[in-house]
Amino acid sequence: MHLRGIKGGVIAAILGAAYAPLLLQASAVCTDEELQRLIEAGTPQEEIEEQCQQAPSEYIPSEIARQEPAHPFSGFDIYHAIGAGAYVMSANTDAHEHGFTGNNVLYRGAFHDNWAVDIGYHEMTHDDWSDIEVSGVDTNLWLGTNMRNEGWNLSVGVGYFSEDWDGESYEQMDLSGMIDYRWRSLVFEARIFGREFEEDTEVLGTRINILYQFGD
Image (cartoon, rainbow, N blue to C red; front, side):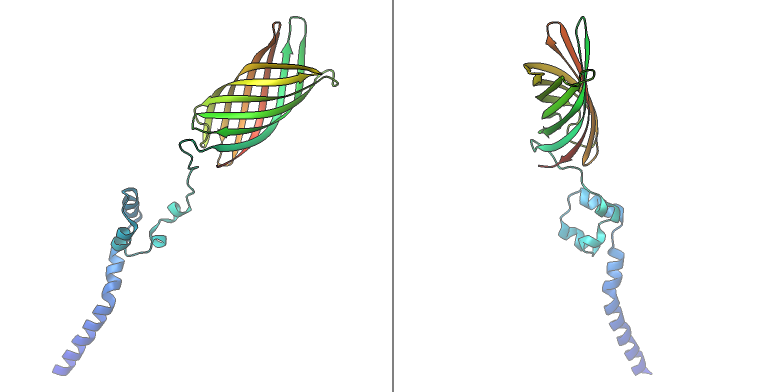
């Protein structure tokens, strides 16, 4: 009887030693909230593994693991975008009003959250006389509320253009305003611009563009 008691005690001790690490590990598993606090506090990975008794891939909450980081642009990393769209312009004089419709392509580089430059090329034809064509290049410097990240952006810009009006060349400065909405890889924008083409000619225009954006 005494031997049976000893034998039972030995078996219990062996089983206890075998299952103790498992019980310790189960009790040491961290909750999502605890893990998030440790990660946000900058706790080294080794300490988190020691406290939570789990590999990193096992303790990162699924919603955090699936979450894609926002565009990591900071400082003067260049945020690139290329796009195309519609171009509508009117040239008004005291005697006549001329309308033009066409398209444009552009490249934009945002080198700061609030600053960007773009360069574009456009072609248009007169709404009433299709043999009259306007084409040219333009560049703009933009100051905006959100030039690189997802969400809304409002911008004002100053630009320079060089155009060919049915064989005659013109170069001048212009002023622009723009509103756009940016997703992760897509931008939809609408802009207006104005300039004095000649002393008696005012030019107003609108562009509607869709751009694809990508990192540096």
